[in-house]
Amino acid sequence: MKLSPLQLDTPQYPVVSIRAVPGVSEEMLDAPLPVSVRAQVLYDSDLSHMASLSIEQNDETQPYVVSIQVLTSFRIDIERCREAYKALNPEIVAVNIARILYASAREILAMVSARAPYGSAMLPGMTIEASDVDIKFETGKVDFILEHAFGLDPQRIQALRQQALAEKSESEVAEEAPKKRVKKLAVKL
Image (cartoon, rainbow, N blue to C red; front, side, top):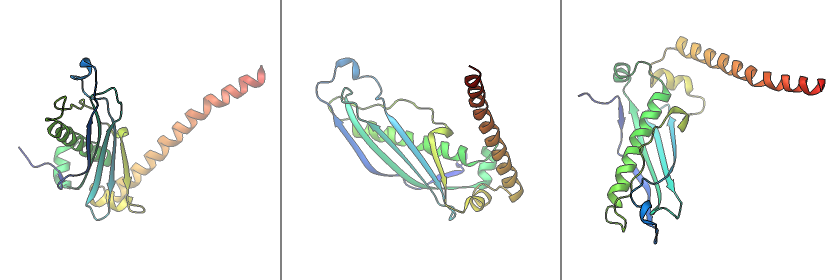
């Protein structure tokens, strides 16, 4: 067993709210709660990054109404990341941090609700992907962060930037092409 390349500071829970809803139907008691999840990671140039995750369940037909927010700062060990991940990038790190926070919030909810009227509230297992995490960088510091937190050299950063611009241009062309065809068809009719 090895240390994780992602070292979280102590997570904090500024919001943990659980309210039992009276008169819930029996079949609702054993199912995991349907929740909405929001995750955000902010990469900072001081290399102490921030992550937050919030979980909401406001459906009054469910056994519990829930609101949880968890925050933590974290650091990235570049050398351990290189060993652990094939391709070290901000998305992989952000997804892993969000997954850790979700698992943590899931356990907090189960523990806090254990003595509630319907027993432990269960959150569903979730697959958190890069598109589910709002990833931000300190303004004007993207290159510095990519170089110092993720170990990318300036040439690699430039190559990635050019690749992203090319992909963006291709997707814009693909989006515009059907619109142009539709307009031409409309003119002919």
